[in-house]
Image (cartoon, rainbow, N blue to C red):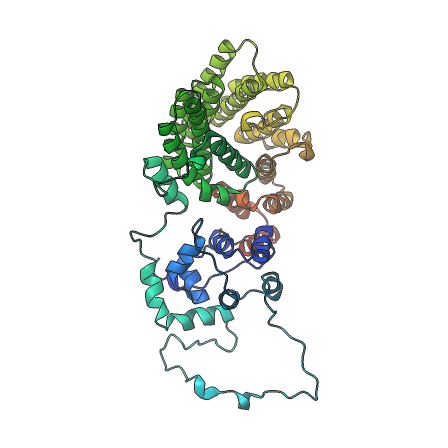
Length: 488
């Protein structure tokens, strides 16, 4: 790991054509460019700093939410050169391309003899400036190692060490927020802490999650959790109950994203906070919604029996309490049944899984269609999606594919649900030995939702496909994963 700061940034060529990257370049949003490099190329702040000739602290400040952004043209040029941007990316950023039309025979040309070689002293043997492959080497690699010889690397490496003023980002910011420490200045605009503003912020986090915009969720949610904690301490009455319900939903999203990222311990903390806030809200629908994420956390930790019992018990509680359920409550009830069915399937309990699926199907019929009440995406189509997943959990790839054929992909409005179906279908095809179709399905899932396909569970599926596929498909898979920056 010690040498990682000095290693070359390997940027997948397709990253420059990613819609988020194109949008960031068009708006000169270097913060997003750097975040995409970290996500898809695995680049550290130090690597970015060295490649672009910047101080690591400046890179950190640029990547920080609300941090000072880059506006100087010469810095854009340095970043484009340092990252070896292709011409079309440079032009999207508003810079001139590096390639040019060959001059006419009458034009004056500069020959090697005209070069000002005296300004570029030869590198001594053993120097980091000396590149043994400089005739054919990668220009980005040459620039990286050349810059390492300069004084800037001293600052870049030492600046990468944590300090009192270093901004907390990603999972570390989640950990701080869940532990109860402030992740933003204590003096907050009262409007930011109003129930109306926080309701919109929670809704935005939910939408981003369901649209597989996991980086956006990870960047914004820790501050939102802290704001909700502050707001619940400063309001009372009905506003306090509303804020507790919002806190339950926000912690639900936090637990979901942490589970996707593989941080089970923090996910447990978030799920527990969600349930605590739900109880404080005194709202049955919110309580049932938080029971879903507790069930998910139990499943993820291998407690399938407890997960099944938790989901079933809360679903029964809702059924007893609600004589005439609202669409919100009916959706949460159905979603709980589906979560319990998945847990039963993972336990190998076919009968319980089938019973809960049938009950959920009845709830879907009662609801009357596919909706997204209380962010559940519940309805008859979602029941079918779960039938695919549960058949897969039970090792019945043929049944999973049978259910998948009955689903109209256009009826699935949410990107996260659609991507999950594609990944489940790819897994079923792999189990069934249809490796080429599995590979095609995997590529479709990545095209639809790159961040969903970047999850650890997706990497596991890719490794399984690589281990069982014939040489031709294995070669294509390895080329594809190399393009998107995933190492199998």
